[in-house]
Image (cartoon, rainbow, N blue to C red; front, side):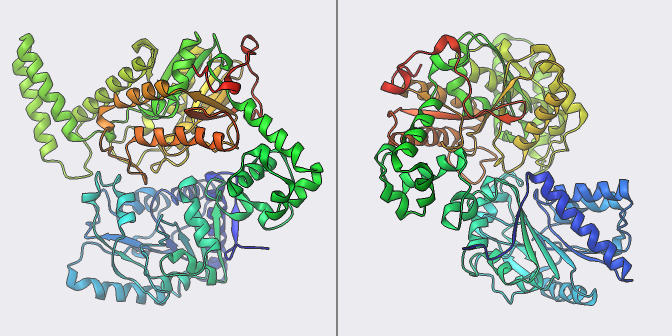
Length: 637
Protein backbone atom coordinates (compact mmCIF):
# COMPACT_ATOMS: atom_id res chain seq x y z
CA UNK A 1 0.00 0.00 0.00
CA UNK A 2 1.57 3.28 -1.16
CA UNK A 3 0.21 6.39 0.56
CA UNK A 4 2.55 8.80 -1.22
CA UNK A 5 0.72 10.70 -3.93
CA UNK A 6 3.79 12.62 -5.14
CA UNK A 7 7.13 10.87 -5.85
CA UNK A 8 9.55 11.30 -2.95
CA UNK A 9 13.34 10.89 -3.01
CA UNK A 10 15.06 10.67 0.39
CA UNK A 11 18.79 11.40 0.38
CA UNK A 12 21.39 11.14 3.14
CA UNK A 13 21.64 14.86 3.99
CA UNK A 14 20.93 18.37 2.74
CA UNK A 15 24.16 18.45 0.72
CA UNK A 16 23.16 15.32 -1.16
CA UNK A 17 19.77 16.89 -1.89
CA UNK A 18 21.46 20.02 -3.25
CA UNK A 19 23.80 18.05 -5.51
CA UNK A 20 21.06 15.88 -6.99
CA UNK A 21 18.80 18.84 -7.77
CA UNK A 22 21.69 20.93 -9.13
CA UNK A 23 22.72 18.06 -11.38
CA UNK A 24 19.19 17.79 -12.73
CA UNK A 25 19.16 21.54 -13.46
CA UNK A 26 22.48 21.22 -15.29
CA UNK A 27 21.04 18.40 -17.40
CA UNK A 28 18.05 20.57 -18.34
CA UNK A 29 20.31 23.50 -19.32
CA UNK A 30 22.54 21.30 -21.50
CA UNK A 31 19.64 19.42 -23.09
CA UNK A 32 17.78 22.61 -24.01
CA UNK A 33 20.96 24.16 -25.41
CA UNK A 34 21.58 20.99 -27.41
CA UNK A 35 18.09 21.42 -28.89
CA UNK A 36 18.98 24.97 -29.90
CA UNK A 37 16.78 26.50 -27.18
CA UNK A 38 17.31 28.42 -23.96
CA UNK A 39 16.56 26.79 -20.62
CA UNK A 40 13.97 28.58 -18.48
CA UNK A 41 14.37 28.13 -14.73
CA UNK A 42 11.88 28.94 -11.99
CA UNK A 43 13.83 29.85 -8.88
CA UNK A 44 13.09 30.11 -5.16
CA UNK A 45 14.65 31.98 -2.26
CA UNK A 46 15.18 31.22 1.41
CA UNK A 47 17.64 28.91 3.15
CA UNK A 48 16.40 25.72 1.45
CA UNK A 49 17.70 26.29 -2.12
CA UNK A 50 20.98 27.98 -1.12
CA UNK A 51 22.78 24.63 -1.23
CA UNK A 52 21.54 24.10 -4.79
CA UNK A 53 22.84 27.52 -5.82
CA UNK A 54 26.23 26.85 -4.23
CA UNK A 55 26.52 23.60 -6.15
CA UNK A 56 25.53 25.30 -9.41
CA UNK A 57 28.15 27.99 -8.72
CA UNK A 58 30.73 25.24 -8.26
CA UNK A 59 29.65 23.59 -11.50
CA UNK A 60 29.93 26.91 -13.32
CA UNK A 61 33.42 27.51 -11.93
CA UNK A 62 34.86 23.99 -12.15
CA UNK A 63 32.86 22.29 -14.90
CA UNK A 64 32.06 25.20 -17.18
CA UNK A 65 28.29 25.07 -16.75
CA UNK A 66 27.20 28.10 -18.79
CA UNK A 67 24.34 30.33 -17.61
CA UNK A 68 24.79 33.13 -20.15
CA UNK A 69 21.65 32.27 -22.13
CA UNK A 70 19.52 30.89 -19.28
CA UNK A 71 16.25 32.68 -18.50
CA UNK A 72 15.12 32.82 -14.87
CA UNK A 73 11.82 33.66 -13.19
CA UNK A 74 11.64 33.94 -9.43
CA UNK A 75 8.60 32.83 -7.50
CA UNK A 76 7.92 35.83 -5.33
CA UNK A 77 8.89 39.04 -3.57
CA UNK A 78 7.70 40.91 -0.49
CA UNK A 79 5.55 44.00 -1.00
CA UNK A 80 6.43 46.75 -0.53
CA UNK A 81 10.14 46.04 -0.90
CA UNK A 82 12.96 47.99 -2.52
CA UNK A 83 15.26 45.80 -4.61
CA UNK A 84 18.37 46.91 -2.71
CA UNK A 85 16.85 46.20 0.73
CA UNK A 86 18.66 43.63 2.85
CA UNK A 87 15.37 41.70 2.92
CA UNK A 88 14.72 41.81 -0.82
CA UNK A 89 14.54 38.55 -2.74
CA UNK A 90 15.97 40.47 -5.70
CA UNK A 91 19.09 41.21 -3.66
CA UNK A 92 19.12 37.68 -2.24
CA UNK A 93 19.29 36.13 -5.72
CA UNK A 94 22.16 38.34 -6.89
CA UNK A 95 24.18 37.81 -3.72
CA UNK A 96 23.61 34.06 -3.52
CA UNK A 97 23.58 33.08 -7.17
CA UNK A 98 23.41 35.46 -10.12
CA UNK A 99 26.58 37.43 -9.33
CA UNK A 100 28.59 34.21 -9.24
CA UNK A 101 27.54 32.55 -12.52
CA UNK A 102 27.62 35.48 -14.95
CA UNK A 103 23.97 35.52 -15.92
CA UNK A 104 22.74 38.09 -18.41
CA UNK A 105 20.90 40.69 -16.35
CA UNK A 106 18.25 41.02 -19.06
CA UNK A 107 17.40 37.33 -18.63
CA UNK A 108 16.60 37.67 -14.90
CA UNK A 109 13.01 38.19 -13.79
CA UNK A 110 12.01 38.82 -10.17
CA UNK A 111 8.60 40.23 -9.17
CA UNK A 112 8.96 43.91 -8.33
CA UNK A 113 8.07 44.97 -4.84
CA UNK A 114 8.85 48.64 -5.38
CA UNK A 115 6.01 49.59 -7.75
CA UNK A 116 3.14 51.91 -6.81
CA UNK A 117 0.11 49.89 -5.78
CA UNK A 118 -1.90 50.94 -8.82
CA UNK A 119 0.75 49.34 -11.09
CA UNK A 120 1.05 45.99 -9.34
CA UNK A 121 -1.76 44.14 -11.14
CA UNK A 122 -0.45 45.17 -14.55
CA UNK A 123 3.05 44.07 -13.50
CA UNK A 124 1.65 40.66 -12.51
CA UNK A 125 -0.12 40.33 -15.87
CA UNK A 126 3.13 41.13 -17.71
CA UNK A 127 5.05 38.65 -15.55
CA UNK A 128 2.71 35.88 -16.70
CA UNK A 129 3.05 37.08 -20.29
CA UNK A 130 6.85 37.05 -20.05
CA UNK A 131 6.79 33.44 -18.83
CA UNK A 132 4.57 32.42 -21.74
CA UNK A 133 6.74 34.33 -24.22
CA UNK A 134 9.78 32.45 -22.91
CA UNK A 135 8.04 29.17 -23.74
CA UNK A 136 7.14 28.30 -20.16
CA UNK A 137 9.32 27.16 -17.28
CA UNK A 138 11.41 24.04 -17.89
CA UNK A 139 12.44 23.40 -14.28
CA UNK A 140 10.89 24.92 -11.16
CA UNK A 141 12.54 24.84 -7.72
CA UNK A 142 10.20 25.05 -4.73
CA UNK A 143 10.50 25.17 -0.98
CA UNK A 144 7.55 24.70 1.35
CA UNK A 145 6.44 26.78 4.33
CA UNK A 146 4.94 25.49 7.55
CA UNK A 147 1.54 26.57 6.27
CA UNK A 148 2.10 24.38 3.22
CA UNK A 149 2.61 27.30 0.89
CA UNK A 150 4.65 27.06 -2.31
CA UNK A 151 5.81 30.45 -3.44
CA UNK A 152 3.62 32.66 -1.29
CA UNK A 153 0.45 30.76 -2.17
CA UNK A 154 -1.00 30.86 1.31
CA UNK A 155 -3.94 28.76 2.61
CA UNK A 156 -6.95 29.36 0.40
CA UNK A 157 -4.98 29.73 -2.83
CA UNK A 158 -6.83 28.05 -5.67
CA UNK A 159 -5.46 25.70 -8.30
CA UNK A 160 -6.24 28.26 -11.01
CA UNK A 161 -4.45 31.17 -9.28
CA UNK A 162 -1.93 33.24 -11.22
CA UNK A 163 0.79 35.77 -10.39
CA UNK A 164 -0.83 38.26 -8.04
CA UNK A 165 -0.49 40.28 -4.84
CA UNK A 166 -1.40 38.33 -1.69
CA UNK A 167 -1.67 38.91 2.04
CA UNK A 168 0.73 36.77 4.03
CA UNK A 169 -0.50 34.18 6.50
CA UNK A 170 0.20 34.73 10.21
CA UNK A 171 2.40 31.61 10.34
CA UNK A 172 4.46 32.83 7.40
CA UNK A 173 5.03 36.21 9.02
CA UNK A 174 5.99 34.60 12.33
CA UNK A 175 8.50 32.35 10.57
CA UNK A 176 10.01 35.38 8.80
CA UNK A 177 10.19 37.44 12.01
CA UNK A 178 13.80 36.51 12.70
CA UNK A 179 14.97 37.72 9.30
CA UNK A 180 13.24 41.06 9.88
CA UNK A 181 14.21 41.40 13.55
CA UNK A 182 10.60 41.28 14.69
CA UNK A 183 7.26 40.17 13.28
CA UNK A 184 6.09 43.77 13.29
CA UNK A 185 8.71 44.52 10.60
CA UNK A 186 7.62 41.73 8.23
CA UNK A 187 5.63 43.08 5.25
CA UNK A 188 1.99 42.07 5.33
CA UNK A 189 1.89 41.44 1.58
CA UNK A 190 3.85 39.82 -1.21
CA UNK A 191 3.69 39.22 -4.95
CA UNK A 192 3.76 35.55 -5.93
CA UNK A 193 3.46 33.25 -8.89
CA UNK A 194 0.14 31.45 -8.67
CA UNK A 195 -0.45 27.73 -8.29
CA UNK A 196 -1.49 27.42 -11.93
CA UNK A 197 1.68 29.16 -13.04
CA UNK A 198 3.82 26.79 -10.98
CA UNK A 199 1.98 23.68 -12.18
CA UNK A 200 2.61 24.64 -15.81
CA UNK A 201 6.36 24.08 -15.33
CA UNK A 202 7.50 20.99 -17.20
CA UNK A 203 9.42 19.66 -14.20
CA UNK A 204 9.16 20.59 -10.52
CA UNK A 205 11.50 19.86 -7.62
CA UNK A 206 10.29 20.65 -4.11
CA UNK A 207 13.12 20.62 -1.57
CA UNK A 208 12.71 20.28 2.20
CA UNK A 209 15.27 19.62 4.91
CA UNK A 210 15.09 19.52 8.70
CA UNK A 211 12.71 18.10 11.29
CA UNK A 212 10.56 21.23 11.30
CA UNK A 213 9.37 20.45 7.76
CA UNK A 214 8.37 16.83 8.46
CA UNK A 215 4.70 17.40 9.37
CA UNK A 216 3.88 19.63 6.41
CA UNK A 217 5.68 17.22 4.06
CA UNK A 218 3.48 14.39 5.24
CA UNK A 219 0.40 16.53 4.67
CA UNK A 220 1.62 17.54 1.21
CA UNK A 221 2.51 14.01 0.15
CA UNK A 222 -0.09 11.81 1.83
CA UNK A 223 -2.98 14.18 2.51
CA UNK A 224 -5.87 15.06 0.21
CA UNK A 225 -5.53 17.90 -2.27
CA UNK A 226 -6.82 21.06 -0.65
CA UNK A 227 -6.38 24.82 -1.17
CA UNK A 228 -5.37 25.20 2.49
CA UNK A 229 -2.12 23.37 1.67
CA UNK A 230 -0.98 24.55 -1.75
CA UNK A 231 1.81 21.96 -1.87
CA UNK A 232 -0.84 19.23 -2.21
CA UNK A 233 -1.57 20.45 -5.75
CA UNK A 234 1.77 18.91 -6.79
CA UNK A 235 0.05 15.53 -6.52
CA UNK A 236 -1.60 16.29 -9.86
CA UNK A 237 1.63 17.20 -11.65
CA UNK A 238 3.02 14.59 -14.05
CA UNK A 239 6.68 15.38 -13.35
CA UNK A 240 6.98 16.70 -9.79
CA UNK A 241 9.43 15.19 -7.30
CA UNK A 242 9.95 15.98 -3.62
CA UNK A 243 13.55 15.76 -2.42
CA UNK A 244 14.08 15.31 1.33
CA UNK A 245 16.81 14.69 3.86
CA UNK A 246 16.04 11.99 6.47
CA UNK A 247 14.86 14.55 9.02
CA UNK A 248 12.25 16.09 6.73
CA UNK A 249 10.99 12.60 5.79
CA UNK A 250 10.50 11.55 9.41
CA UNK A 251 6.68 11.75 9.49
CA UNK A 252 6.05 9.89 6.23
CA UNK A 253 4.27 6.62 6.90
CA UNK A 254 6.92 4.51 5.14
CA UNK A 255 9.57 6.07 7.38
CA UNK A 256 7.76 6.43 10.71
CA UNK A 257 5.51 3.34 10.64
CA UNK A 258 6.57 1.21 7.65
CA UNK A 259 4.62 -1.80 8.97
CA UNK A 260 1.47 0.10 8.05
CA UNK A 261 2.30 -0.02 4.33
CA UNK A 262 4.05 -3.33 3.69
CA UNK A 263 6.67 -5.87 4.66
CA UNK A 264 9.37 -4.75 7.09
CA UNK A 265 12.99 -5.77 7.50
CA UNK A 266 13.00 -6.11 11.28
CA UNK A 267 16.20 -4.53 12.56
CA UNK A 268 16.69 -3.78 16.29
CA UNK A 269 15.98 -0.10 15.55
CA UNK A 270 12.73 -0.94 13.77
CA UNK A 271 11.66 -3.24 16.58
CA UNK A 272 12.21 -0.49 19.12
CA UNK A 273 10.20 1.99 17.04
CA UNK A 274 7.36 -0.48 16.54
CA UNK A 275 7.01 -1.42 20.21
CA UNK A 276 7.13 2.19 21.39
CA UNK A 277 4.54 3.13 18.77
CA UNK A 278 2.28 0.24 19.75
CA UNK A 279 2.54 1.09 23.44
CA UNK A 280 1.45 4.65 22.67
CA UNK A 281 -1.37 3.48 20.41
CA UNK A 282 -2.97 1.14 22.95
CA UNK A 283 -1.84 3.13 26.02
CA UNK A 284 -0.28 0.16 27.78
CA UNK A 285 3.16 -0.32 29.35
CA UNK A 286 5.54 -2.39 27.22
CA UNK A 287 5.46 -5.43 29.48
CA UNK A 288 1.63 -5.46 29.32
CA UNK A 289 1.41 -5.74 25.52
CA UNK A 290 -0.24 -9.04 24.46
CA UNK A 291 0.26 -10.73 21.09
CA UNK A 292 -3.24 -9.72 20.03
CA UNK A 293 -2.30 -6.02 20.24
CA UNK A 294 0.55 -6.68 17.81
CA UNK A 295 -1.72 -8.56 15.39
CA UNK A 296 -4.40 -5.87 15.54
CA UNK A 297 -1.91 -3.15 14.59
CA UNK A 298 -0.15 -4.63 11.52
CA UNK A 299 2.71 -6.11 13.55
CA UNK A 300 2.00 -9.82 13.09
CA UNK A 301 5.34 -10.32 11.34
CA UNK A 302 7.19 -9.11 14.43
CA UNK A 303 5.32 -11.63 16.59
CA UNK A 304 5.99 -14.36 14.03
CA UNK A 305 9.70 -13.55 14.15
CA UNK A 306 9.88 -13.93 17.95
CA UNK A 307 7.10 -16.47 18.56
CA UNK A 308 5.09 -14.30 20.96
CA UNK A 309 4.90 -10.85 22.51
CA UNK A 310 6.82 -11.70 25.68
CA UNK A 311 10.37 -11.92 24.27
CA UNK A 312 9.85 -8.76 22.21
CA UNK A 313 8.48 -6.86 25.19
CA UNK A 314 11.29 -8.00 27.47
CA UNK A 315 14.05 -7.19 25.00
CA UNK A 316 12.78 -3.67 24.30
CA UNK A 317 12.13 -2.97 27.98
CA UNK A 318 15.68 -4.04 28.89
CA UNK A 319 17.17 -1.96 26.09
CA UNK A 320 15.31 1.10 27.35
CA UNK A 321 16.43 0.50 30.93
CA UNK A 322 20.05 0.22 29.75
CA UNK A 323 19.85 3.72 28.26
CA UNK A 324 19.10 5.37 31.60
CA UNK A 325 22.24 6.86 33.17
CA UNK A 326 22.19 8.63 36.49
CA UNK A 327 25.35 10.42 37.65
CA UNK A 328 26.98 7.21 38.91
CA UNK A 329 26.79 5.75 35.41
CA UNK A 330 28.06 8.78 33.54
CA UNK A 331 31.70 9.38 32.50
CA UNK A 332 34.17 10.26 35.24
CA UNK A 333 37.60 11.92 35.14
CA UNK A 334 37.54 12.52 31.37
CA UNK A 335 38.58 15.44 29.22
CA UNK A 336 35.34 16.85 27.78
CA UNK A 337 34.59 19.61 25.28
CA UNK A 338 31.04 20.90 24.96
CA UNK A 339 30.54 22.78 21.68
CA UNK A 340 27.69 25.27 22.00
CA UNK A 341 26.57 26.96 18.74
CA UNK A 342 25.11 29.98 20.56
CA UNK A 343 26.05 31.16 24.06
CA UNK A 344 22.98 29.54 25.63
CA UNK A 345 22.66 26.20 23.81
CA UNK A 346 24.80 24.41 26.38
CA UNK A 347 22.50 25.08 29.33
CA UNK A 348 19.29 24.90 27.27
CA UNK A 349 20.05 21.51 25.82
CA UNK A 350 22.31 19.83 28.38
CA UNK A 351 22.17 21.86 31.57
CA UNK A 352 21.40 18.69 33.54
CA UNK A 353 24.31 16.57 32.35
CA UNK A 354 26.69 19.56 32.55
CA UNK A 355 26.32 19.65 36.31
CA UNK A 356 26.62 15.88 36.65
CA UNK A 357 29.77 15.69 34.51
CA UNK A 358 31.34 18.54 36.47
CA UNK A 359 30.51 16.80 39.77
CA UNK A 360 32.07 13.60 38.37
CA UNK A 361 35.44 15.39 38.21
CA UNK A 362 35.52 15.54 34.42
CA UNK A 363 37.77 18.28 33.04
CA UNK A 364 35.12 20.36 31.30
CA UNK A 365 35.58 23.02 28.61
CA UNK A 366 32.68 24.78 26.89
CA UNK A 367 33.50 26.09 23.43
CA UNK A 368 30.98 28.78 22.45
CA UNK A 369 31.15 28.67 18.68
CA UNK A 370 29.48 31.97 17.78
CA UNK A 371 29.00 35.26 19.56
CA UNK A 372 25.21 35.18 19.15
CA UNK A 373 25.36 38.96 18.94
CA UNK A 374 22.66 39.42 16.30
CA UNK A 375 20.19 37.89 18.76
CA UNK A 376 20.44 40.83 21.17
CA UNK A 377 17.86 43.61 21.03
CA UNK A 378 19.06 47.21 20.93
CA UNK A 379 17.23 47.97 24.16
CA UNK A 380 19.58 45.55 25.95
CA UNK A 381 22.54 47.63 24.79
CA UNK A 382 20.84 50.80 25.98
CA UNK A 383 20.26 49.22 29.38
CA UNK A 384 23.93 48.35 29.72
CA UNK A 385 25.01 51.79 28.54
CA UNK A 386 22.87 53.28 31.28
CA UNK A 387 24.50 50.92 33.77
CA UNK A 388 27.97 51.96 32.61
CA UNK A 389 27.10 55.64 33.01
CA UNK A 390 25.77 55.09 36.51
CA UNK A 391 28.66 52.84 37.49
CA UNK A 392 31.18 55.39 36.24
CA UNK A 393 29.44 58.07 38.24
CA UNK A 394 29.89 55.93 41.33
CA UNK A 395 33.54 55.08 40.60
CA UNK A 396 34.41 58.48 39.14
CA UNK A 397 36.50 57.25 36.22
CA UNK A 398 36.45 58.14 32.48
CA UNK A 399 32.99 59.70 32.76
CA UNK A 400 33.37 62.10 29.81
CA UNK A 401 34.81 59.49 27.47
CA UNK A 402 32.13 56.97 28.38
CA UNK A 403 29.40 59.55 27.87
CA UNK A 404 30.70 60.50 24.44
CA UNK A 405 31.00 56.90 23.30
CA UNK A 406 27.57 56.08 24.68
CA UNK A 407 25.97 58.95 22.76
CA UNK A 408 27.60 57.87 19.49
CA UNK A 409 26.33 54.34 19.96
CA UNK A 410 22.83 55.45 20.90
CA UNK A 411 22.67 57.73 17.86
CA UNK A 412 23.75 54.88 15.59
CA UNK A 413 21.05 52.60 17.00
CA UNK A 414 18.40 55.31 16.76
CA UNK A 415 19.12 55.89 13.06
CA UNK A 416 19.20 52.18 12.21
CA UNK A 417 16.35 50.67 10.22
CA UNK A 418 15.03 47.16 11.02
CA UNK A 419 17.47 44.62 9.64
CA UNK A 420 20.33 47.09 9.14
CA UNK A 421 23.74 45.85 10.22
CA UNK A 422 24.93 47.23 13.56
CA UNK A 423 28.02 49.39 13.65
CA UNK A 424 31.11 47.45 14.87
CA UNK A 425 30.95 48.94 18.40
CA UNK A 426 27.36 47.76 18.84
CA UNK A 427 28.20 44.30 17.50
CA UNK A 428 31.03 44.05 20.01
CA UNK A 429 28.85 45.22 22.91
CA UNK A 430 26.24 42.62 22.01
CA UNK A 431 28.96 39.98 21.88
CA UNK A 432 30.15 40.96 25.37
CA UNK A 433 26.58 40.85 26.71
CA UNK A 434 26.17 37.28 25.54
CA UNK A 435 29.59 36.22 26.80
CA UNK A 436 28.89 37.49 30.32
CA UNK A 437 25.54 35.68 30.27
CA UNK A 438 27.25 32.46 29.17
CA UNK A 439 29.75 32.63 32.03
CA UNK A 440 26.95 33.29 34.50
CA UNK A 441 25.05 30.32 33.07
CA UNK A 442 27.81 27.75 33.59
CA UNK A 443 28.57 29.20 37.04
CA UNK A 444 24.97 28.31 37.93
CA UNK A 445 25.73 24.62 37.26
CA UNK A 446 28.92 24.77 39.32
CA UNK A 447 31.52 25.51 36.66
CA UNK A 448 33.78 28.57 36.39
CA UNK A 449 34.66 31.32 33.90
CA UNK A 450 38.03 29.68 33.12
CA UNK A 451 36.14 26.76 31.58
CA UNK A 452 34.51 28.95 28.91
CA UNK A 453 36.17 29.51 25.52
CA UNK A 454 34.66 31.99 23.08
CA UNK A 455 35.64 30.84 19.59
CA UNK A 456 33.77 33.58 17.69
CA UNK A 457 33.86 31.61 14.43
CA UNK A 458 34.25 33.85 11.35
CA UNK A 459 31.31 32.41 9.38
CA UNK A 460 28.90 34.05 11.84
CA UNK A 461 30.49 37.51 11.76
CA UNK A 462 28.31 38.98 9.02
CA UNK A 463 26.19 41.16 11.30
CA UNK A 464 23.05 39.78 9.64
CA UNK A 465 20.90 36.66 9.69
CA UNK A 466 22.51 35.25 6.56
CA UNK A 467 25.85 33.66 7.44
CA UNK A 468 28.87 32.87 5.30
CA UNK A 469 29.66 29.25 4.45
CA UNK A 470 31.94 27.31 6.79
CA UNK A 471 35.55 27.79 5.68
CA UNK A 472 38.98 26.50 6.67
CA UNK A 473 39.25 29.43 9.10
CA UNK A 474 36.28 28.14 11.13
CA UNK A 475 37.63 24.61 11.04
CA UNK A 476 41.13 25.73 12.10
CA UNK A 477 39.82 27.54 15.18
CA UNK A 478 37.79 24.48 16.14
CA UNK A 479 40.71 22.14 15.48
CA UNK A 480 43.02 24.27 17.65
CA UNK A 481 40.72 23.74 20.65
CA UNK A 482 40.62 19.99 20.00
CA UNK A 483 44.40 19.84 19.82
CA UNK A 484 44.78 21.86 23.01
CA UNK A 485 42.27 19.91 25.14
CA UNK A 486 42.65 16.48 23.45
CA UNK A 487 39.14 15.50 24.55
CA UNK A 488 37.96 11.97 25.20
CA UNK A 489 34.32 13.08 24.83
CA UNK A 490 32.90 15.83 22.64
CA UNK A 491 29.33 17.16 22.90
CA UNK A 492 27.92 18.72 19.72
CA UNK A 493 24.53 20.18 18.83
CA UNK A 494 22.79 17.68 16.56
CA UNK A 495 19.65 19.78 16.37
CA UNK A 496 19.06 20.44 12.66
CA UNK A 497 15.78 22.29 13.18
CA UNK A 498 17.51 25.59 13.90
CA UNK A 499 15.51 27.80 11.48
CA UNK A 500 18.57 29.82 10.47
CA UNK A 501 20.98 26.90 10.08
CA UNK A 502 23.59 28.03 12.62
CA UNK A 503 23.44 24.71 14.48
CA UNK A 504 23.84 22.82 11.22
CA UNK A 505 26.86 24.92 10.25
CA UNK A 506 28.45 24.61 13.68
CA UNK A 507 28.07 20.84 13.48
CA UNK A 508 29.81 20.92 10.10
CA UNK A 509 32.72 22.89 11.57
CA UNK A 510 33.20 20.37 14.38
CA UNK A 511 32.94 17.30 12.14
CA UNK A 512 35.43 18.73 9.65
CA UNK A 513 37.79 19.56 12.51
CA UNK A 514 37.46 16.02 13.88
CA UNK A 515 38.33 14.67 10.43
CA UNK A 516 41.59 16.61 10.60
CA UNK A 517 42.29 15.85 14.27
CA UNK A 518 45.45 13.77 14.78
CA UNK A 519 44.66 12.58 18.30
CA UNK A 520 42.61 9.54 19.39
CA UNK A 521 39.03 9.81 18.14
CA UNK A 522 36.76 11.02 20.95
CA UNK A 523 33.24 9.82 21.55
CA UNK A 524 30.77 12.30 20.07
CA UNK A 525 27.57 12.91 22.02
CA UNK A 526 24.91 14.71 20.00
CA UNK A 527 22.41 16.77 21.95
CA UNK A 528 19.19 18.52 20.98
CA UNK A 529 16.77 20.59 23.00
CA UNK A 530 16.67 24.17 21.73
CA UNK A 531 14.06 23.26 19.13
CA UNK A 532 13.12 19.68 20.03
CA UNK A 533 14.42 16.60 21.86
CA UNK A 534 15.71 13.24 20.64
CA UNK A 535 12.90 10.66 20.58
CA UNK A 536 13.21 8.02 23.30
CA UNK A 537 13.66 5.25 20.77
CA UNK A 538 16.40 7.08 18.90
CA UNK A 539 18.40 8.21 21.94
CA UNK A 540 21.33 6.14 23.20
CA UNK A 541 21.60 7.74 26.64
CA UNK A 542 18.80 9.09 28.82
CA UNK A 543 19.95 11.23 31.74
CA UNK A 544 17.41 11.62 34.56
CA UNK A 545 16.99 14.82 36.55
CA UNK A 546 15.29 15.43 39.85
CA UNK A 547 12.90 18.33 40.38
CA UNK A 548 15.70 20.34 41.97
CA UNK A 549 18.09 19.58 39.11
CA UNK A 550 15.55 20.74 36.55
CA UNK A 551 15.04 23.91 38.60
CA UNK A 552 18.82 24.52 38.59
CA UNK A 553 18.89 24.00 34.82
CA UNK A 554 16.15 26.58 34.36
CA UNK A 555 18.06 29.00 36.59
CA UNK A 556 21.07 28.63 34.28
CA UNK A 557 18.83 29.44 31.31
CA UNK A 558 17.48 32.49 33.16
CA UNK A 559 21.02 33.92 33.26
CA UNK A 560 20.68 34.60 29.54
CA UNK A 561 18.64 37.73 30.15
CA UNK A 562 18.94 39.01 26.58
CA UNK A 563 17.00 35.92 25.43
CA UNK A 564 14.46 36.04 28.23
CA UNK A 565 10.78 36.97 27.88
CA UNK A 566 11.04 37.42 24.11
CA UNK A 567 13.92 35.95 22.14
CA UNK A 568 14.81 37.72 18.88
CA UNK A 569 14.82 34.38 17.03
CA UNK A 570 12.23 32.15 18.70
CA UNK A 571 11.55 29.90 15.71
CA UNK A 572 8.13 28.30 15.28
CA UNK A 573 7.73 27.72 19.04
CA UNK A 574 6.94 31.07 20.68
CA UNK A 575 7.46 29.90 24.24
CA UNK A 576 10.54 30.92 26.16
CA UNK A 577 13.40 28.42 26.05
CA UNK A 578 13.01 27.47 29.72
CA UNK A 579 9.36 26.63 29.08
CA UNK A 580 10.25 24.44 26.13
CA UNK A 581 12.96 22.72 28.17
CA UNK A 582 10.64 22.00 31.07
CA UNK A 583 7.98 20.60 28.75
CA UNK A 584 10.37 18.43 26.75
CA UNK A 585 12.46 17.11 29.63
CA UNK A 586 9.38 16.30 31.69
CA UNK A 587 7.66 14.91 28.61
CA UNK A 588 10.52 12.49 27.98
CA UNK A 589 10.30 11.26 31.57
CA UNK A 590 6.52 10.95 31.35
CA UNK A 591 6.81 8.94 28.14
CA UNK A 592 9.18 6.49 29.85
CA UNK A 593 6.79 6.18 32.77
CA UNK A 594 3.98 5.39 30.34
CA UNK A 595 6.15 2.66 28.84
CA UNK A 596 6.45 1.08 32.28
CA UNK A 597 9.86 2.40 33.33
CA UNK A 598 10.50 4.20 36.64
CA UNK A 599 8.77 7.55 36.98
CA UNK A 600 11.65 10.02 36.81
CA UNK A 601 10.90 13.71 37.17
CA UNK A 602 12.65 14.86 33.96
CA UNK A 603 15.16 13.59 31.40
CA UNK A 604 17.65 14.72 28.78
CA UNK A 605 18.43 12.56 25.74
CA UNK A 606 21.64 12.01 23.75
CA UNK A 607 22.82 10.12 20.68
CA UNK A 608 26.38 8.74 20.90
CA UNK A 609 28.84 8.15 18.07
CA UNK A 610 32.34 6.74 17.89
CA UNK A 611 34.42 7.02 14.71
CA UNK A 612 31.34 8.50 13.03
CA UNK A 613 29.16 5.50 13.86
CA UNK A 614 26.32 5.08 16.33
CA UNK A 615 27.08 3.24 19.56
CA UNK A 616 23.87 1.35 20.24
CA UNK A 617 24.73 0.71 23.90
CA UNK A 618 27.53 3.04 25.05
CA UNK A 619 29.66 1.34 27.71
CA UNK A 620 28.94 2.17 31.32
CA UNK A 621 32.07 3.29 33.22
CA UNK A 622 33.41 0.24 35.07
CA UNK A 623 33.60 2.23 38.28
CA UNK A 624 29.87 2.84 38.11
CA UNK A 625 28.29 -0.58 37.61
CA UNK A 626 26.08 -0.10 40.62
CA UNK A 627 22.35 -0.56 40.90
CA UNK A 628 19.64 1.80 42.01
CA UNK A 629 19.10 4.38 39.27
CA UNK A 630 16.67 2.39 37.14
CA UNK A 631 14.97 0.57 40.01
CA UNK A 632 13.82 3.40 42.19
CA UNK A 633 13.78 6.55 40.09
CA UNK A 634 16.02 8.07 42.74
CA UNK A 635 19.75 8.56 42.75
CA UNK A 636 19.29 11.00 39.89
CA UNK A 637 22.21 13.11 41.00
